[in-house]
Image (cartoon, rainbow, N blue to C red; front, side, top):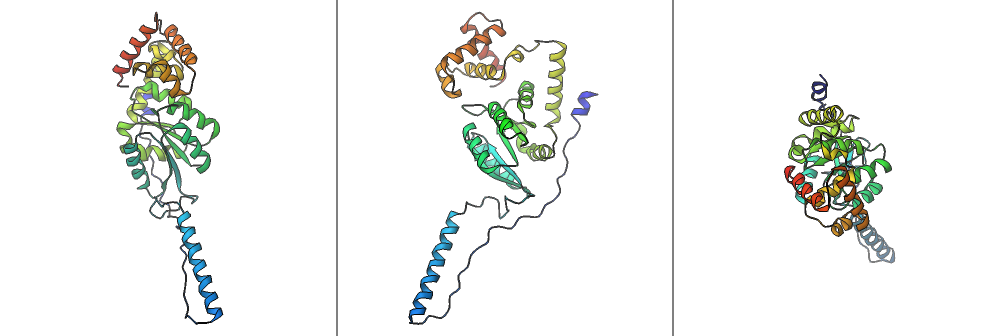
Length: 289
């Protein structure tokens, strides 16, 4: 009964909203020319107005929203964070195809995303879980602290329920795999903006099963014992990264990474760093990480 309730269709239709009015265009009018002092002055003033108008137009940002006003109170202003340019471009086009959605910013890293979020104050943020450097999970936590009321939708290449659970615990309002993103992201955005948590029906079933099984059989999934940071480091070890490279990517000291690796070894009951590396490779390969 719990699974059926959670996997019930959760999409709702958003009301149509009128487009905003685009920026006003400036025009100059010219009058008859006279070879007089006043005529020269008038032409000089008109030239000044034209130059001023050209400068104002050049200062305006490129219009990427088909004439919509991203500052309208009815427009859902979205910041997209993904480090895969082709996927991000396709996602932005899809979002901008909706009349009431407007992508106001794009970022490819967590630091860039935080800077843009502070500058743009978006209605919501869409975050790729697998960002290089600080992960999407860490970004989600930072956004939730700094912008507690801003909805966050996480996109991920992982179809493991543990990532969805961790994303929701980090403060995300929804979780969609990239495999299904282009088919369900519009519904997900509407749900999240509407104050509801979004998981696709199949993902909701897996997440609930994962949580129920974890409570019934503690430790059934060994990696559930790991913290988010430890899991991130385990993934990177499984991808063949050395301690120094992991430290640089995550902005940590090598000693801190080694401490996390020691905790992983203890929690997974492994004997040494070599066994940690072997487990990490097997675990990552099995999940397509």
